[in-house]
Image (cartoon, rainbow over all chains, first blue to last red; front, side, top):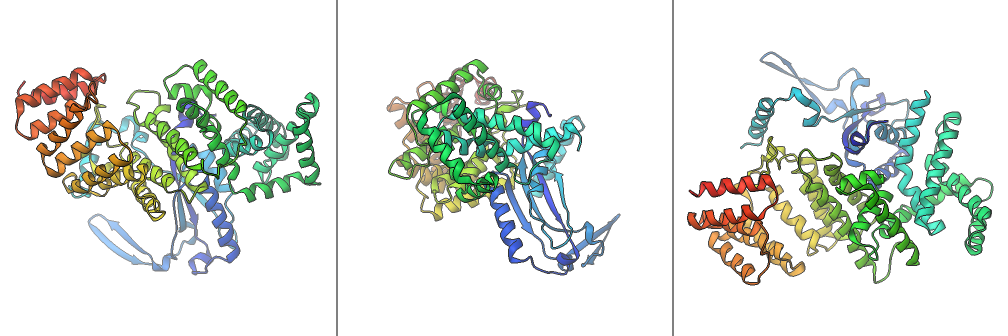
Length: 150
Length: 420
């Protein structure tokens, strides 16, 4: 088990619902699934775990921007590799990855057929450890300032 | 599944279920201590069963059934309290052949009512705020005594004793362990909110280099606030407090410089504010206002925090609105510290002279005499009014009053900038 200190520091994860043929075809979930998902979301909220969550339109309405050196090419959806696409996501705050996994296992199957959730931990400044020197941190800060239009 | 992996899964499941489990058991046995012991017994049972059978589909209901069985065994063996025995015996008989299914149904039905009852119990006004905070972190947050002790810079023995006493006091008070619905609900809720905010502020007061559990108290309090908002969706002040905590927490990364010194709100790098928490905070504030709670003390403080959160740059801050909100807050929650902050807001909205006039009122009332932030504010107003000599003297006075080394250095720096 993780040490007490690590266990007590909360972390954010993004939980992605992977797309399927059905979601890419724009087939909306059944009433039963909506009901089950509503109940699951309520559990997440009542446990103080859920920070945000959204469903996404099929990739046919999406765009990709491809980078190659200075070049930028805009590619219209839909995109072919369905299993790599995302149909929805949550942001959760949990104590560790094990807790995120337990909650994810309680999720109703989000799709009519086989489907997948993917959990990824959100980076925090502290995760970069010593690699993030004060100089780099300052540089990052300057960039953020510019982004914010300061 | 490897044995260690199962073990970790069980610990994690237990952590998720613990508060609801204890809440349900307290309602049944009317004894917090016994409920905690029974929950632990259920964990022990799971650790011995689940590696063989796998984690059940409804682990919460399984744990509750196991704990209930232990409770009944215990009552029978010790022949405790005939009345309770009869009650629980009847409960068991009514359950029929599949207790897990029935418990599952009951747990779905109550929609967290038992958990809300436990929160109200842990935060009962018969207990001191410190005892309430310790008990809440233990029962709802699932923290160990050692963790609570480190979080409050106290010894494990002190906290253990505090929790034991608190449980005894609750036992003697003859509580129903239910959610108060009558006229005392408002007072009881205020007691809950006070405890959650106390936990949050303890975390907020933590400084760099301290045990990580201290700043983690902010996250713990936010989680409690979010749980409470889920369980009591009609209470405007619950959302007011949640909004206040989310917005304040959004600045946690920006409020200290890399060397650990504090960065004042107006000088913080706003790009480092956590926009997700700000959005959540503003949404919670909207909810509080929609429920008719705009004038509540937490909602007002959240509205103040929101004024800063909405300003993309410090100079875009709506100080007039902040000054007006402090005028209102002062009536709802009279306190010299609110008056001091009000003076700061007025100085920003209407100029340093307006701030000095309000500080004068505080000084004449004899309040905040040894409070470093009063001369610090006065020094700032005088500095902005161009009265540098007087300003320097105030900064030095403030530096002499503070016990925080970094704050002292900061104030002496400001005094030096006045030419002293």
